[in-house]
Image (spheres, rainbow, N blue to C red):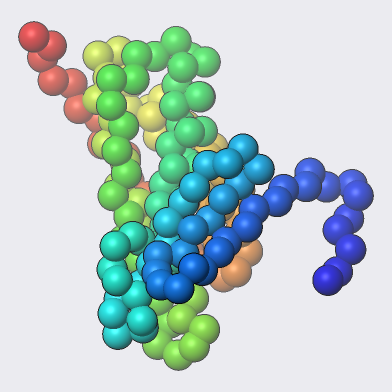
Length: 152
């Protein structure tokens, strides 16, 4: 195993297989993540596949940035969702070639310009998952929608 660079922040996780799917990933804090695949590939379909988790990780990483940026601007974030679609290469390894993210924010006081700026900063600067995907050659496009629903 290659020696880790001492100047970087180190992380450690483990993934285990016990007789059947799903795989169980565990981090240092003991949090568990399940990974599975379709029966065609000896899975049960009971959990997301690793490649689906990459897309979910992109959305989650970026959403955490967006929420943090908007909260620092003292904006009220009622709800934030991200719908993610992706294209993959035809041949192995079937890497992502293009990803599209649609953010939808419900907020009574956030202007669209603040939401767009927060998403742009996340995708272009702060989100580690986005950076890794972009460095692999995958294009990431996004749109942001603001919803102001009347509160009951």
